[in-house]
Amino acid sequence: MSTVFSKIRDLVSSFLRSSESYEEAVGIFVKELQKEMIRADVNVRVVSELTSRIKERALKEEPPPGVLRKEWFIKIVYDELSKLLGGDTSPEPFPKSFPWIVLLVGIQGSGKTTTAGKLALFYKKRGYRVGLATTDVYRPAAYDQLKQIADSIGVPFYGERSGDPIEIAKKSIKTLLNEYFCDVVIVDTAGRHGYGKEEDLLKEMKYIAESIKPSEVVLVVDASIGQKAFDLAKKFHEWTPIGSIVITKLDGTARGGGALSAVTATGAKIKFIGDGEKLEDFEVFNSRKFVARILGLGDIESLLEKFRAIEESDEIRRRLEKAVAIGRMSMRDIYHQLKSIKKLGPLRKILDLVPGFSMLKIGDEVLRGGEKKMDVWVSIIDSMTYRELDNPELVDKSRARRIAVGSGRSISEVRELLNYYELVNKMLRDLKRGKIRLKGLDLSKLGGGSGE
Ligand SMILES: Nc1nc2c(ncn2[C@@H]2O[C@H](COP(=O)(O)OP(=O)(O)OP(=O)(O)O)[C@@H](O)[C@H]2O)c(=O)[nH]1
Ligand SMILES: [Mg+2]
Image (cartoon, rainbow, N blue to C red):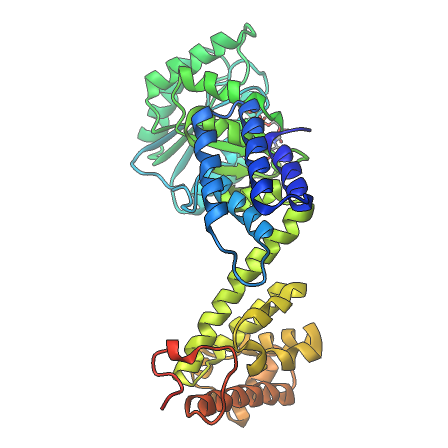
C-alpha cells in the first residue's frame, strides 16, 4: 500500500544513505517531500509551511552529543509531522458542556457502530452517564448490533427498526436526556442510504445534525483507505462541519496515511484511535506516538529509540546533577535509574554521554549482574514504604525481613541494595566536600557545588 507516509519512509531511508553533503541532502529531501505531499492532496499552504520549517530547523539546529546531523534531521521531520497532526498537546477528550451530544458519521464499514460502543465505554468508565442511539434503519442488523453493545456495557439505548432517521434522532435525544438523564449521548448513523446514493446519505447527515444540534460531529475514518480519505473527509465536511476525527483499524496492515489527509481536508483534530475489534481497543490520540508508529520501520525505528533514550538520559542527568549539588541521592532516584537503564536496554551505552554517570558507577554494579539483578533491586524497592524510601536508614533487621518477604527476595539481597545506597551517598558526600572530583560534570553550574 502506498500512502504518503510510506513515501516519507522511503525518503528518509534514502536520505540516511545518501552520499551528498548534509545541505544538499536536506534540499533534496525537502523538495521530494513537497512533491509527495502535494500529490497526496495535502493542502499546498500546509505543505509549504511544513517544509520551510523543516528546512529552517535543519540548517540551524545543532544535534546533541552522540547524534549525527543526519539523524537529528529525522528527529526534526518527526517533530514537525507530529505538530501537523496535532502537536504536543493531547486533544481534550472530555465533554466541554452538558449534555454532550456526539454524532458519528462516516462511510459504510468505517467502524462507526463499533466506535459508538468504544466511546460509550470510554466515558462510562470515567464516570459519565452515557446513552447510545442509532438512526440506521437501512442495514437490517444495525439496530441489534448497537443494542447488543449497549447491553454488554450496561448503558441505555434508543433506536427504532424502521422509520425516519431524523425523527428517530430527535426522539432518541429526548428519551436519553429526559428519561435516562444521560449527560453524554452518542448517536450512530447509517453508512449507506436506502437508495444507495451517496448524496442522499450526506443530506440525511446534514438534516440529522440540524435537528439535534450535536456538540460535536465526529468523522470516523478507516485507516486503510489511504488517500481516498481526503476527498471523503472534504465531502462530509462540506455537508456537516466536522468537529473531530476518529481513526479506526490501526491494528491492521494499514499505516494510516489517510489520517493526515482527513486532518488537512477538514482542519479537525484526531481525538481517538481504534486499534482492534474489542471495545477496549481504543485510546486518546497522541500525535507523536502516531507518527512514530506510521514511520516506525527499519532505520527510523532505531533512530526514534535513540531519541527516546536521549530524553531518558536527560532525566537521569537532571537527577544526577541535583544529587551532586545536594550531596545526596535518594532511593527514589536509584529506583528511577534502575528503571531507565532497563528501559534503555541495548541503548544504555547512551548513558556514557551523561556527564559523571560512568564515574559514579551508578548502575554498573547492577549491570554486571545483568537484568536479573536489576529486577531484584526494583522489586525490593517496590516493597519499601514511602517513609523507608525517603529514609533508608530506618531499615533495621525487622524491616529488612519484612521487605525481603514482601518482595520474595533474600535478606542479603536487601542488604546489598542498602550497601549500594550507602556507597553512592558516601561518594556524593565526598564529592560535595571536594575530596574527590568528577570528570565531565561541570560543577560550577550547580548551586552549592563542590567548591566548599
Ligand atoms: N480490526 C479492527 N476492526 C474494526 C475496528 N473498528 C471496527 N472494526 C470492524 O470493522 C467492521 C465494521 O465495523 P462497524 O462498526 O460495523 O462499521 P460501521 O461504520 O458501523 O458500518 P456500517 O454501519 O455498515 O456503515 C466490523 O467487523 C468491526 O468489528 C478496529 O479498530 N480494528
Ligand atoms: Mg454501523
